[in-house]
Image: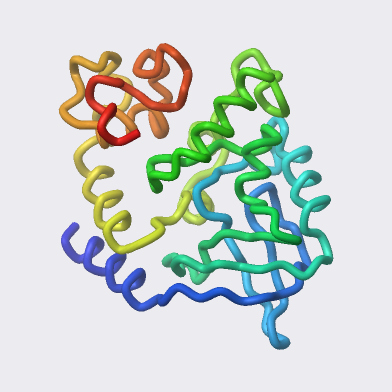
Amino acid sequence: MRLLVALLCSIALSVQAETFNAKVIMVMDGDTVMVLRGGQKIKVRMANIDAPEKDQTFGKQARDSLQELVGRKQVQIDSQAVDQYGRIVGQISVDGRNVNQEQVKRGMAWEYSHYHSDKTYIGLQSDAQQSRRGLWSQASPQAPWQWRRGHVTGEASRLREPPPANQHAAARQAAQTQMYDLQCGKKRHCSQMSSCDEAHFYLTRCGVKTLDRNKDGVPCEDLCSGKK
């Protein structure tokens, strides 16, 4: 386990933040694109969000939405990291619009607050939920990370896990996977949570909705009120 954490940390540490322009040549799904930069094809995984899979309900709509926003366009990419599969993880913008946030605003992706502390994403998702936009028009939308457990296995499943944005997140995810994974399905109440990070894990990765009764994206307010 220590070796895994060290590996993840070294990957993240080896990447320096960079902003560059490139042309989108392929939209792969609702949160992943292929861009062309200086003759080189680069796969970009959008940070802070997780869109429905292609074969999942609203997967096609999420891809079509991203195609409309960035397809065949020159975009600006603010890279944050490179994950263990060689994909750049970053923010995409076009004509001054933050595309990552736009996908959440349209109800075409979940915000992934487990890996960031940007309240903007939480607010955008809450607004989309209240307005029943996009995937939130469904009675009980299934989060992509939950859908993948029943439809994708092995290497393909790992490839689609949202990557850590920095070395601290990488180490935290590895530690949390070790600490919490076996408990999925066993904890249901805030009184059982030992920290805000643990509450976020059970809400976002295990789908324990009882931790977020007001559906604002923040679990267990007493634990997480200082982290809003």
